Image (cartoon, rainbow, N blue to C red; front, side, top):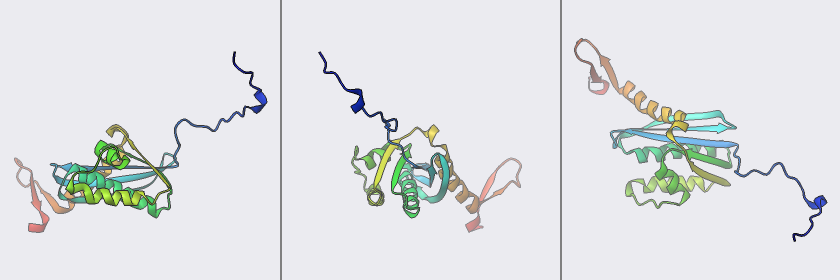
Length: 176
């Protein structure tokens, strides 16, 4: 037989959540056209699902997708720090980066080690930071930014020449 519990001593708490809630969410992404190839990075910070900051940059001409992913993460972490955010949820579609940051995977690539260390150093400055893998379909804004960074670089570097109806030609502005 179970003991009788006095209901006066049971406190009902409706504020208890199964999953932690975060005011701020960072979503990041990186892309590489060629892998290695032209690479871009993008990051977005949300406050209660409302975008409050977004940025992108061209990583370079011969970088891997994983390098670009870390660049996107670092970009976002730097801005979150600048904004004074102390508690942060980080979401990305790169299982490698997310699992390395969580400590599930070790970073063994010499090409990524400096980026990994930089990201971990930035992460250590937050009171609380958690990492979650999300599907690409749930990371569209950061994905678009990383691709826009590459496309913007191409737009600034090449001009379109359609003088010949049979062929599309891209001329390098730097060598014209």
